[in-house]
Image 1 (cartoon, one colour):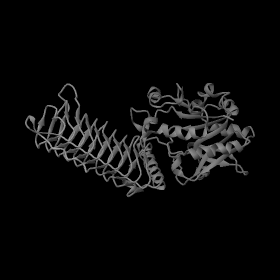
Image 2 (cartoon, one colour; image 1 turned 45 degrees about the horizontal axis):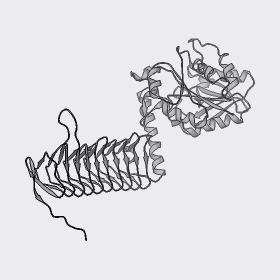
Image 3 (cartoon, helix red, strand yellow; image 1 turned 45 degrees about the vertical axis):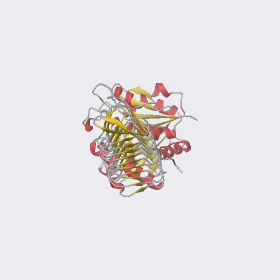
Image 4 (tube, helix red, strand yellow; image 1 turned 60 degrees about the vertical axis):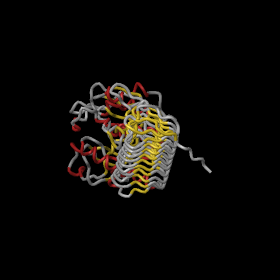
Length: 451
């Protein structure tokens, strides 16, 4: 048994009033089409087929791992599914059809729909919801035996039919062989379009039962047609993500002010304080304290770290790092175990070894810093000369005095020291003290042997 999926994503989305195709607008960090694809993939075993139209090139560049077919003319949802016939006919026993602008449909819900159709001797099953606010959805009429008799679009419904509260969600599972024939039997509407909902009428005329799976969660049915709907979907998805993390052992002090994108992972016993934003592919280990007021993107954080009121992007923190407030890690920053980074410090494209202490108001760029180095307040690696960037290397156990300027390329030896305010333009050997502007080595330091 093979199950294919078709995602309809050809609409123009004019109500979004955007140059970006509607399907690429993001919900919790992912294009809404990506959410729809993940739900469809969970219940199918074939490469998803995405029907595109307006903005097709942009969508094709943004989404990978799918088969695209183009609906050159937008002649309705039935016509859109027809475009997938050549790609899927004879390749699957069942076909799931969903919409790319329904990002909240859960994978388990799509699976329930498939399971219902597998038990259905008829040609199709669909999702419905009971709701007081119809949101323009078609009404579901049923036969006495409980099977679906018709989908009545709101625009043509009678006053009595408008009182029906069971609504068509817009997700279907079809018997594949029946579907391809039925699509060509759909009659064109007065608007010149072919509607997928007409397959219900065709199935009933064929004497084939149409089953419905009733959803409990109205939020799953939110379709995005404008920026108001987009905000609704974002809020609902954010709540869902936060709840999942809390159920997995994460403490979120104030969920309504904590923003976690869909691709983020957080370990158990970590605490997220208010106004924390976790974005992209960020991963956070166990037992961390994050925030308040921290913004973290595409960053890997180990266990037992504390990030207080800081901004991190494209960085790596090993276990036990403590940083902030008002610290910044830029792409390529890598802090080893138990590094401490003070307020208003900044690191870019640099490695700080285990146990490094970096004082406040310091900047480290294009540097490799050995274990247990002390970087005094106001230290700057002068790594850019206006043409190229050059490296700074600091050996283990060195002590960099406050307001030191390290003019790259330069190497500070192991256990070396610089005096406060030194401007270092030449390498400093191991165990030497360098002071002055420019700095010069003036004294060989005595090594303290460990007992």
